[in-house]
Length: 206
Image (cartoon, rainbow, N blue to C red; front, side):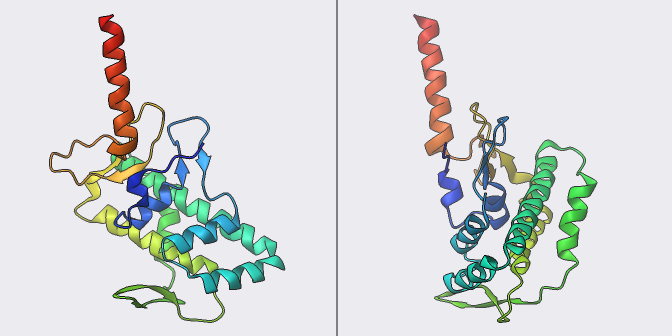
């Protein structure tokens, strides 16, 4: 089952939040993995503008003769994502941050930012490789820094998890004035929740 919120599709959404939300239905026993293959990982990196199609073509060609490198990259990507999610979840719940998750994120902060730099892209800037021999893991560094920036900035207390009863569990940053947003998207989970409440009230009145 596919589940794509309007918030996730927004270019304004935090990179690290979009990354965590590549696992859908986190409040269910059976989650939905959206980055299940190395090719899916590369497609996602293009979608969030951490890689361009030329780089993806280069990596795909390289991985044909080095499938273990592709699988290792995918495992690294998943590990970073789950470490960030665990830290976000602790922030949301007010619990203690898992030491292993924190150590995993800190390892990314302790590595040089070589191989990647800001460069012009249209009217703005984007991350771009600076070397011909690309180390795929370097493409994940901006995600780690996005998580750290969010966790240590003024919006840290605004990180929330969708309360949809079906088990959505997508994360979002609550920018509402009242700070009472409960759903990742009013157009999706919010409307469904309201429809369910209306149905139950109608049933109770019959």
